[in-house]
Every structure is written in C-alpha cells, then in structure tokens.
Length: 395
Image (cartoon, helix red, strand yellow):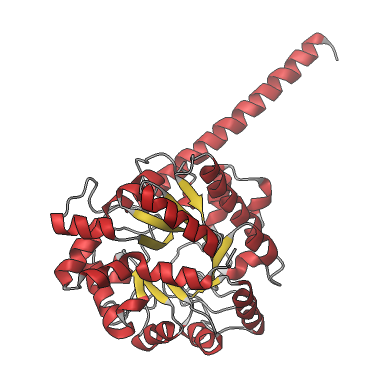
C-alpha cells in the first residue's frame, strides 16, 4: 500500500473509532437522561428525623430486598447525582444489605395490567451503554454481564462493598460490620426466569455467578410462570415446577414479586422452604394487579418467608414515608410482624419519596404508626436476615 493510501486508511480507521466512541458517549448520555426521568425522588437529601428515630434506626440491621441500579451503568462506589442507590448513599441510610435485582427484558409501553413479550426496551439500554455484543440477544448474557459489573465494583471497593453468596459470607460480613459500620453487602437477584433460557440451560451459569434469588416472572408470562402483568396470567408450567424444585435443592431463594396469583398459589402449594415477594404492596391498602391479597400474605408467612413493601405509590398507596409505614403496618397485621420487610424498588423506573440515604424516614414513620422498637428492628431488616440465614447455601 502506498504511503498516501496508508494515510487514507489510517484516517478512515481513526474516524471510525471516533465515531464509535461518539456514538457510545451519545448513548450513555441518553441513558442518563432516561434514568433522571424514570427514577425521580420527591425530596432531595439531606433528610432529617427525630433523635429517637435516629437512634432506633442506627441500632437496626437494615435490609432492602430489591433495587435496580445495575441497569443504569453508574459507578456505585461513587455518590451519584441521579437515581436512588449507590454505596455512599446506602451507608448514609445505614443499609447493611442491599439486594441488587437484574432485569433482562422489559416490554415497550410497560404497564401493570397486560404486557406481551414481543418488544424489549433493555435491548436499547444495552446498545446505549455499550454492553458486549453477546448481550444484545442473550438474556442470560445480560444477567451475567450485570453480575460481573457488581463483582468488579466489590473487588475494587477495599472491603466497602461485599458480595454475599452463602450463609457463611453473611455471618462474616455481619461480624465485620459490627466493628466497621460503614460497609455494605450486596446479594444478586434476577427478575424473571426467562433469563435462564427456555429450557433452563442457563441456570448453572447464573448460580455459578453468585445469584442467590430468582424471580419466576417479571412483566410478561414466560416458559415457567405466569406474570401478574402478562396476557394469560397462568400458573406454574411443568418446567416451572421443575425449576422451583431445582431452586429449593440448590438453596436459591424463590421470589414471587410480579408473579400471577395462580403462580403464587402453585408455589405456595409446592414449596418446602421460605419464599419472598421482594418488592410489592398489599391490596388491603392499594387494590391493584401489582399487589398481594391477604390470603397470599398469609401463605408467604406460612412458609417462613417475607413480603417486601415497595416505596412507590402503586405499591404503598401514597408518595411519602407515612404511606410506606401504613402498608407495612397493614401487612404486619395480616401476615405477622415477623414476615414483613422493605422492598424499595429503588432505580426501578419508579418515583419514590427519598433516596437510599433517607431510610431513617421509614423508621420515624413506623414509630408514628405505633410500632414498637423490636417490631421496627424486624421490619427494617431483622426478618430478612433471618430468612437469608435459613435459605442461603451454608458455604
């Protein structure tokens, strides 16, 4: 190739790289704008509470059963200027353990009544954020990619963020946190078993990657279970029954959030271990397709499990901490205070009253609602710790 031709070729290559970089930067800008729009908060920090609430909150081991920050691509070790969750804000909110949910497919024009599986906004997110090419088509690859992102952040956090994969990990972390309160644990979860593939072939890779909670359905029906927001809204399929048994055998927590009523009833008939509904509401406060009726609250409690009350209006029936506390109090009156926890859905495309640094506002609202301090300690995280101690693999 002549020098002039080499120069032209080199110039074209540089231009192509520059174009790809610019496209990726543009995509990330669009994703950031979408995050600001989809994940608002009613009131910005700092948040203030009474001295009593501050002391009660400081004594609690706070656990949030569901948040979605991994989708948005922020460095969670840095305090963000958008969204709801990152490690600094979790520490400010005295959150000991955060469950990090991974959604792998989300239908266009999402709603809580009826969605099919023919469209997917997360493909656009993957392209915009520059995820590996394999993730553009593979839901399993998306889950593994996001799990690796959290693991990488934990590895460079100097111990500030620890991933929990077993009961042993949990006990080690809690012992360390007793002396060093400014640390956080994370646990990986999947929203929707469609991430495992139509024949569950992806389950081994998901378990090996450290995921320890799996939701059977998300916003559409899949090969294992009906969704509360799907078209058919059926129960467990034969493959779904096989999956529940497999998850119980592997000591992976079954999550009923987003599942149809028929699916939940089927699981409650089959299960021999505690199950959770990680982020939901109660129909006795907010009667809609997203939330659980009283009989299913009692059914989850009967397994030894826990219901995580969501922080957004569709779940809790209001737009402040008092609404969250009312839903918690109602759930406790039906299922028992030992079976209720927190399931914020932070960064899940919902509006919430505060970000993760404001968790003490719930403690104050629960005091105002009349709950005593031992009950508040259970709801804020003690119940979730009990479930994970009994449900996770020993090592």
